[in-house]
Image (tube, rainbow, N blue to C red; front, side, top):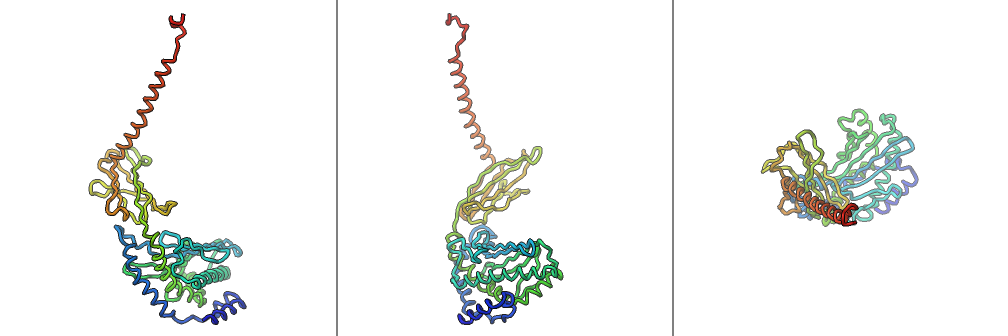
Length: 375
């Protein structure tokens, strides 16, 4: 195998990258040993998956997606800006150094159980694939009606479903619209891509080695990396931090109306349930902001409720999170207003006393020049 790789390397050095890709024949199916290792890893990690999926949230498994993003901005025929990154759910795990052509591991556990040889092969694939792709797009831009400047986006990865099924995916986009997807070792045109998608897929399907490399990454490398970083990074992924919550009011939306805001911050993991309620009734008309990241890796969100000024009695904000152990946070609007009133009193009383004291001192120190005692 080593000798064969050296021969491949020699052929690559003697010819262009594109010629190398076109002349290679597809490899046979992947070794059974590698496929079995993925299945064995899945069996070993089922207890971990049960923990990750626990909690009162139907979106728990949305976090178990490993995605690799690529985008190329083609400004003109001589200027292309390329960006790569990889994410586990909403957590970035890998970056890319364009100068050295190497993967940046953003966490100690980001390598998973991949060997150094596999990491180098992945870097080689990324480097070679994104050398040849710009050449292809430049050459066929006119034929495919790609007008400069244009943007190419690629999203590939694998997703762990409830029950242990792992599904891979690969989407190829042009100017933000689906153009191709990769399935069964072939590029397939998007139904909405028209003749352009058909022409692009027909051309890319000629690059046989590229297709085999993509297929191997999707069917073998990605599942093993996903499962192994879930195991290696479980200390971070299973970290639980209790949220802090408070209430405030926003700008008045109109006459006799009020905007109430429930803030929840500092929680981890991301899945959370926050609702405005009255008694046991969920309140209609609420608006939830997107869940945003804090600098320390925790999360933050706001939930808004617009109500009539006279209809605020009995309203409260309820927060459920896995870190709370079933003890929901409940913030009543009346208590919030009461405590705000006490804060105002606590501030105003000292100010009144200080004003009275200053007035008394000033009166005592004042001397009337016409007083009989001065003569």
